[in-house]
Amino acid sequence: MKLYLTLIICSISISFCCAQDSLYQSKTDKQVVDKIKELQEEKTGTIVCYYIYCIGNMLRPYAPDTCISSQIKYLLWLKGNVSLIQKFDECSIYSSVIIPPSFLMLLKNNSKTIEKSKIKPFGITDIVNGKKKRSTMFIDHSCHYVFEIYDGRKLIKKEINDFDLEKKSDYDKHLNRNYYKNQKSILNKLRLLVEQDVAAYEKSLKQKGTHN
Image (tube, rainbow, N blue to C red; front, side):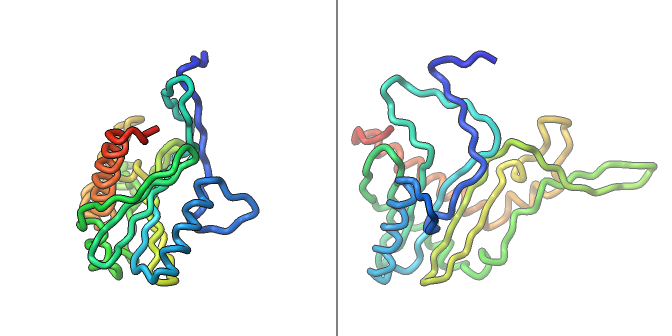
């Protein structure tokens, strides 16, 4: 395979918790840890660290002399009745901005349901010798949406494999029997809302000239 100068191959297999203390902390992790501690000292209620990590090879386009961050994470929190978001990476310092309350309000008002909720794995059904056989399908390349929810000193971690949200497999066209349940899951509702907030935030950063 030829590698072009305008592309890099990025293989990410592990992403540490946002506030995990370890022998090695990336610049992004350190910034996030410090911010979480700051917010907790201010008695901030619900704090959410949201990020995506991918397993497998990905091609990422980039321009010359552009900073490429191996980690991008977002903190979302409530300050009184105001919802805020802030980005953290290895390239720049970003300000927090006010966002619509939908994501954090959904989380705050459904904390127990969210804690118990799970996205079901990609389930397939085959006919073997005239009988239905159910099994689970996995792939070796997918992206995972991660929510680390800090409620006081309690940490709740939720992770969504994007493959489990697919209706059918691109490889062999198997249908996902858990597709509709996963689409209706409160975790997927959170994912859709936070992705809207992130997209709007990134657009505002680009307009201000602080987007990488």
